[in-house]
Image 1 (cartoon, rainbow, N blue to C red):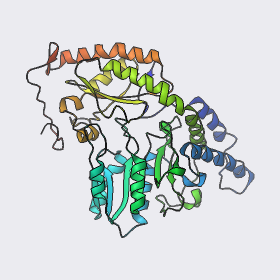
Image 2: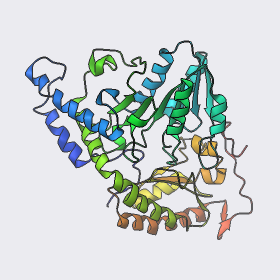
Image 3: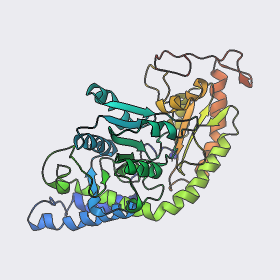
Image 4: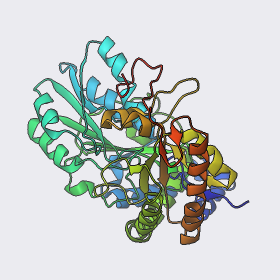
Length: 404
């Protein structure tokens, strides 16, 4: 059975060219780049080249890049650096729809005495800019908003926000894990102070990430060790994966045009076809979003059941409801957007890449209506061709604000 992979916001396939670029560094080029002998010396130029490729993709200087293990480490490094370098400031701003690497720090920070403002979004997932502006204060140490949401693909106006923060003397960080390689970036002309990315979102392997830190910004290391990364991140360099990320960045730069034309057209074709299914809806802003992502709800059925049936046909996607075992609580992103309870649980995220084809989209459009019709036929909240008379659903979560 052929695999049709529509889950590229979760992770991507390692590009064959990336893999081939990495292989020598598992074999003959195995030296530690910090070593003084020739085996270390022969590796160092390749790391410099990889760093330059990533700098070219971001539009920054090579020495503004710090290699990390993943996007979550990059997020945590940015957050805690801003705190440690500004000990007199006790206020941070983020949003209610951030990645868990950011929002799961909020309870800890509050216990440590910090005041946290979590900015809301509208029904399209767009940031409430007025609420953000009201939250800014002289005590604000950091503003951290993602560039693009991992579930809906909605893009935040990070350049505008960075400019506002710069004028106020506030450090601004963006989690750009989903955005890097999908939309153009130019850090040289930006007021963004720190930016996180993860290699496995752009066809590099898992286990490698990076943090852009604007030149001149006060910085405190998160992982303390040796002199690696100019003393900004301890630990022996993960050479093969650094090389892989560099090659992936080079390829991503070459494919930006395709991402924003052919891939976008495939996404739109898939989305328009799925919206022909009754009681379906797109979650998020359909204009200002990533070119590869759509999040669609099919009311009165469970997203996990859809995924199970899709997998039977070899189609890989993800559930926007992000339900955990034994809980009916929907995604925090969809809750923040006020998506109706009957739709939030039936949400599916489909995220494409340059490897996807029209044939794959057409196959998915053939199978989706059959799956939805079958599941609705089994649902107690569906009768004949529409919702049953009583479709008021409740859940067992105290934190669900959709059903009360």
